[in-house]
Length: 76
Image (tube, rainbow, N blue to C red; front, side, top):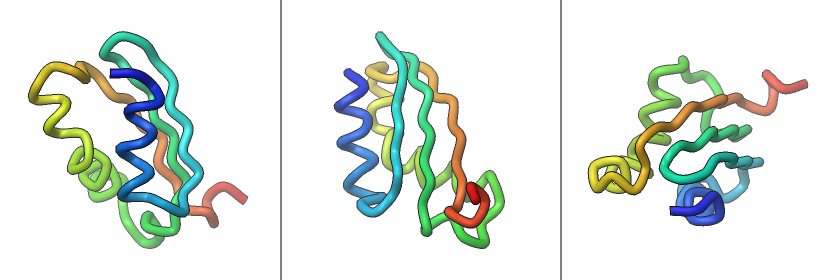
């Protein structure tokens, strides 16, 4: 799985978000700024991202994911 693959998966669920993905092999760092995170605490935000990536984590394509998840208001 590549950085572009991970970003493409996340773009489906978060089409209007600012998404950055770094990493190599099976370890990735994901940064997302999305309206979808408004009013949500960290765990529900992470659950939204894991819902997208879980099949790839289960298969071993993705081994580790670190996340920075923010709403637009938290960035400014």
